[in-house]
Image 1: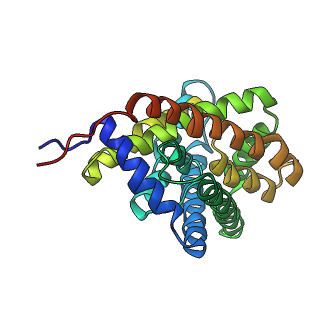
Image 2: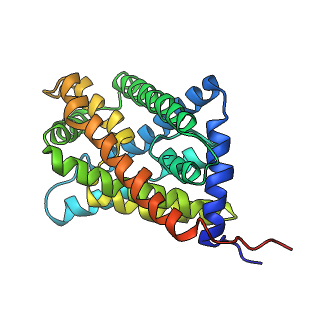
Length: 263
Protein backbone atom coordinates (compact mmCIF):
# COMPACT_ATOMS: atom_id res chain seq x y z
CA UNK A 1 0.00 0.00 0.00
CA UNK A 2 1.35 3.44 -0.98
CA UNK A 3 1.66 5.99 1.82
CA UNK A 4 0.98 8.84 -0.59
CA UNK A 5 -1.65 9.75 -3.18
CA UNK A 6 -1.08 10.23 -6.90
CA UNK A 7 -1.43 13.77 -8.32
CA UNK A 8 -4.84 12.86 -9.79
CA UNK A 9 -5.98 11.56 -6.41
CA UNK A 10 -4.71 14.70 -4.69
CA UNK A 11 -6.66 16.81 -7.19
CA UNK A 12 -9.83 14.91 -6.29
CA UNK A 13 -9.10 15.23 -2.55
CA UNK A 14 -8.46 18.97 -2.85
CA UNK A 15 -11.62 19.51 -4.89
CA UNK A 16 -14.09 17.55 -2.78
CA UNK A 17 -12.66 17.15 0.71
CA UNK A 18 -10.75 20.44 0.94
CA UNK A 19 -12.97 22.70 -1.15
CA UNK A 20 -16.50 21.59 -0.31
CA UNK A 21 -15.82 21.23 3.41
CA UNK A 22 -14.39 24.73 3.70
CA UNK A 23 -17.07 26.56 1.76
CA UNK A 24 -19.89 24.73 3.60
CA UNK A 25 -18.57 25.82 7.01
CA UNK A 26 -20.74 28.18 9.12
CA UNK A 27 -19.51 31.78 9.01
CA UNK A 28 -18.67 32.04 12.72
CA UNK A 29 -16.63 28.84 12.67
CA UNK A 30 -14.87 29.99 9.50
CA UNK A 31 -14.04 33.34 11.12
CA UNK A 32 -12.74 31.79 14.35
CA UNK A 33 -10.55 29.33 12.44
CA UNK A 34 -9.35 32.21 10.28
CA UNK A 35 -8.28 34.13 13.37
CA UNK A 36 -6.42 31.02 14.53
CA UNK A 37 -4.57 30.80 11.21
CA UNK A 38 -3.54 34.46 11.46
CA UNK A 39 -2.16 33.80 14.94
CA UNK A 40 -0.37 30.62 13.83
CA UNK A 41 1.34 32.31 10.87
CA UNK A 42 2.15 35.21 13.20
CA UNK A 43 3.94 32.80 15.54
CA UNK A 44 6.04 31.59 12.61
CA UNK A 45 6.80 35.21 11.70
CA UNK A 46 7.78 35.96 15.29
CA UNK A 47 10.11 32.94 15.25
CA UNK A 48 11.74 34.27 12.08
CA UNK A 49 12.32 37.62 13.80
CA UNK A 50 13.88 35.95 16.85
CA UNK A 51 16.24 33.88 14.68
CA UNK A 52 17.43 36.87 12.64
CA UNK A 53 17.38 39.73 15.18
CA UNK A 54 21.02 39.55 16.29
CA UNK A 55 22.60 38.53 12.99
CA UNK A 56 25.56 40.39 11.62
CA UNK A 57 26.49 40.67 7.96
CA UNK A 58 27.69 38.33 5.22
CA UNK A 59 27.55 34.59 5.86
CA UNK A 60 26.27 35.12 9.42
CA UNK A 61 23.25 36.99 8.06
CA UNK A 62 22.60 34.28 5.47
CA UNK A 63 22.81 31.55 8.10
CA UNK A 64 20.47 33.46 10.40
CA UNK A 65 18.00 33.90 7.54
CA UNK A 66 18.11 30.17 6.91
CA UNK A 67 17.44 29.51 10.59
CA UNK A 68 14.51 31.91 10.49
CA UNK A 69 13.22 30.24 7.33
CA UNK A 70 13.56 26.85 9.06
CA UNK A 71 11.39 28.01 11.98
CA UNK A 72 8.69 29.82 9.99
CA UNK A 73 6.98 26.69 8.52
CA UNK A 74 5.77 25.70 12.00
CA UNK A 75 3.01 28.25 11.45
CA UNK A 76 1.61 26.39 8.43
CA UNK A 77 2.04 23.07 10.25
CA UNK A 78 -0.24 24.44 12.99
CA UNK A 79 -2.73 25.59 10.35
CA UNK A 80 -2.89 22.22 8.61
CA UNK A 81 -2.90 20.00 11.70
CA UNK A 82 -5.45 22.17 13.54
CA UNK A 83 -7.67 22.63 10.50
CA UNK A 84 -7.45 26.42 10.58
CA UNK A 85 -8.52 28.65 7.69
CA UNK A 86 -5.67 30.38 5.84
CA UNK A 87 -6.41 32.69 2.91
CA UNK A 88 -3.32 31.79 0.90
CA UNK A 89 -3.87 28.04 1.26
CA UNK A 90 -7.57 28.47 0.46
CA UNK A 91 -6.62 29.93 -2.90
CA UNK A 92 -6.69 26.26 -3.97
CA UNK A 93 -10.48 26.50 -3.82
CA UNK A 94 -10.30 27.38 -7.51
CA UNK A 95 -9.60 23.68 -8.14
CA UNK A 96 -13.05 22.94 -6.71
CA UNK A 97 -14.48 25.84 -8.71
CA UNK A 98 -13.06 24.48 -11.98
CA UNK A 99 -14.52 21.06 -11.23
CA UNK A 100 -17.87 22.68 -10.40
CA UNK A 101 -17.88 21.25 -6.87
CA UNK A 102 -18.39 24.80 -5.54
CA UNK A 103 -19.63 28.07 -7.01
CA UNK A 104 -18.13 31.54 -7.30
CA UNK A 105 -20.22 32.86 -4.42
CA UNK A 106 -19.10 30.10 -2.07
CA UNK A 107 -15.44 30.62 -2.93
CA UNK A 108 -15.47 34.41 -2.65
CA UNK A 109 -17.42 34.22 0.61
CA UNK A 110 -14.72 31.99 2.07
CA UNK A 111 -11.88 34.14 0.79
CA UNK A 112 -13.38 37.37 2.11
CA UNK A 113 -14.21 36.07 5.58
CA UNK A 114 -10.91 34.22 5.97
CA UNK A 115 -8.80 37.16 4.74
CA UNK A 116 -10.39 39.50 7.28
CA UNK A 117 -10.11 36.89 10.04
CA UNK A 118 -6.43 36.28 9.22
CA UNK A 119 -5.86 40.03 9.51
CA UNK A 120 -7.63 40.19 12.87
CA UNK A 121 -5.61 37.28 14.26
CA UNK A 122 -2.28 38.60 12.96
CA UNK A 123 -2.74 42.15 14.22
CA UNK A 124 -4.09 40.94 17.57
CA UNK A 125 -1.00 38.77 18.04
CA UNK A 126 1.27 41.70 17.10
CA UNK A 127 -0.47 43.90 19.70
CA UNK A 128 -0.08 41.21 22.38
CA UNK A 129 3.58 40.74 21.47
CA UNK A 130 4.06 44.50 21.88
CA UNK A 131 3.02 44.13 25.53
CA UNK A 132 4.81 40.82 26.13
CA UNK A 133 8.19 42.27 27.09
CA UNK A 134 9.86 40.04 24.48
CA UNK A 135 10.83 42.82 22.10
CA UNK A 136 14.20 44.08 23.30
CA UNK A 137 16.41 46.50 21.42
CA UNK A 138 17.57 44.02 18.77
CA UNK A 139 14.05 42.67 18.21
CA UNK A 140 12.63 46.18 17.88
CA UNK A 141 15.31 47.14 15.35
CA UNK A 142 14.65 43.99 13.34
CA UNK A 143 10.87 44.45 13.38
CA UNK A 144 11.22 48.06 12.23
CA UNK A 145 13.67 47.07 9.51
CA UNK A 146 11.38 44.33 8.19
CA UNK A 147 8.31 46.58 8.15
CA UNK A 148 9.98 49.57 6.50
CA UNK A 149 11.65 47.37 3.88
CA UNK A 150 8.37 45.66 2.97
CA UNK A 151 6.40 48.87 2.38
CA UNK A 152 9.27 50.21 0.22
CA UNK A 153 9.22 47.36 -2.34
CA UNK A 154 8.15 48.67 -5.81
CA UNK A 155 4.70 47.55 -6.97
CA UNK A 156 5.68 45.19 -9.81
CA UNK A 157 8.42 43.60 -7.72
CA UNK A 158 6.13 42.97 -4.75
CA UNK A 159 3.45 41.39 -6.96
CA UNK A 160 6.03 39.08 -8.59
CA UNK A 161 7.44 38.06 -5.20
CA UNK A 162 3.91 37.41 -3.92
CA UNK A 163 3.07 35.32 -7.00
CA UNK A 164 6.10 33.11 -6.45
CA UNK A 165 5.32 32.88 -2.74
CA UNK A 166 1.88 31.40 -3.13
CA UNK A 167 3.01 28.94 -5.76
CA UNK A 168 5.16 27.50 -2.97
CA UNK A 169 2.40 27.71 -0.34
CA UNK A 170 -0.30 25.97 -2.36
CA UNK A 171 2.19 23.32 -3.50
CA UNK A 172 2.96 22.70 0.18
CA UNK A 173 -0.79 22.34 0.86
CA UNK A 174 -1.09 20.14 -2.24
CA UNK A 175 1.77 17.84 -1.21
CA UNK A 176 0.61 17.45 2.40
CA UNK A 177 -2.84 16.52 1.10
CA UNK A 178 -1.19 13.59 -0.64
CA UNK A 179 0.54 12.37 2.53
CA UNK A 180 -1.15 9.82 4.79
CA UNK A 181 0.82 10.28 8.01
CA UNK A 182 1.78 13.26 10.16
CA UNK A 183 5.55 13.02 9.62
CA UNK A 184 5.11 13.01 5.83
CA UNK A 185 2.79 16.02 6.06
CA UNK A 186 5.38 17.90 8.14
CA UNK A 187 8.13 17.29 5.58
CA UNK A 188 5.76 18.17 2.71
CA UNK A 189 5.11 21.52 4.37
CA UNK A 190 8.61 22.31 5.64
CA UNK A 191 10.66 22.25 2.45
CA UNK A 192 8.60 24.56 0.19
CA UNK A 193 7.73 27.01 2.99
CA UNK A 194 11.34 27.17 4.16
CA UNK A 195 12.42 27.89 0.58
CA UNK A 196 9.90 30.68 -0.03
CA UNK A 197 10.96 32.46 3.17
CA UNK A 198 14.66 32.02 2.40
CA UNK A 199 14.04 33.35 -1.11
CA UNK A 200 12.47 36.57 0.19
CA UNK A 201 9.03 36.10 -1.35
CA UNK A 202 5.97 37.96 0.01
CA UNK A 203 3.14 36.30 1.95
CA UNK A 204 0.07 38.43 2.67
CA UNK A 205 -0.85 36.84 6.00
CA UNK A 206 2.72 36.82 7.33
CA UNK A 207 2.93 40.50 6.40
CA UNK A 208 -0.27 41.13 8.37
CA UNK A 209 1.92 40.37 11.41
CA UNK A 210 5.34 41.62 10.29
CA UNK A 211 4.34 45.13 9.22
CA UNK A 212 1.87 46.06 12.00
CA UNK A 213 4.44 44.71 14.48
CA UNK A 214 6.99 47.12 13.05
CA UNK A 215 4.47 49.96 13.22
CA UNK A 216 3.67 49.18 16.86
CA UNK A 217 7.34 49.33 17.89
CA UNK A 218 8.12 52.57 16.08
CA UNK A 219 8.53 52.06 12.30
CA UNK A 220 8.08 55.26 10.28
CA UNK A 221 5.11 53.97 8.30
CA UNK A 222 1.33 54.44 8.22
CA UNK A 223 -1.61 52.06 8.01
CA UNK A 224 -2.26 53.40 4.52
CA UNK A 225 1.23 52.38 3.42
CA UNK A 226 0.79 48.97 5.03
CA UNK A 227 -2.27 48.20 2.90
CA UNK A 228 -1.62 50.16 -0.31
CA UNK A 229 2.12 49.46 -0.63
CA UNK A 230 2.11 45.85 0.57
CA UNK A 231 -0.90 43.92 1.87
CA UNK A 232 -3.22 44.60 -1.08
CA UNK A 233 -0.67 44.06 -3.90
CA UNK A 234 0.74 41.03 -2.08
CA UNK A 235 -2.78 39.61 -1.82
CA UNK A 236 -3.20 40.12 -5.59
CA UNK A 237 0.11 38.38 -6.28
CA UNK A 238 -0.77 35.53 -3.93
CA UNK A 239 -4.05 35.03 -5.82
CA UNK A 240 -2.23 34.98 -9.17
CA UNK A 241 0.19 32.31 -8.01
CA UNK A 242 -2.04 30.25 -5.74
CA UNK A 243 -5.51 30.61 -7.24
CA UNK A 244 -4.71 30.88 -10.95
CA UNK A 245 -1.34 29.45 -12.00
CA UNK A 246 -1.08 26.24 -9.94
CA UNK A 247 -4.82 25.36 -10.08
CA UNK A 248 -4.89 26.01 -13.86
CA UNK A 249 -2.08 23.54 -14.45
CA UNK A 250 -3.63 21.04 -12.03
CA UNK A 251 -7.04 21.30 -13.68
CA UNK A 252 -5.63 20.95 -17.19
CA UNK A 253 -3.44 18.02 -16.18
CA UNK A 254 -5.69 16.03 -13.86
CA UNK A 255 -9.35 17.04 -14.16
CA UNK A 256 -10.02 14.37 -16.78
CA UNK A 257 -7.93 11.71 -15.06
CA UNK A 258 -9.82 8.73 -13.75
CA UNK A 259 -8.77 8.19 -10.16
CA UNK A 260 -8.23 4.46 -9.59
CA UNK A 261 -10.69 2.93 -7.17
CA UNK A 262 -9.33 1.40 -4.01
CA UNK A 263 -9.88 -2.28 -3.48
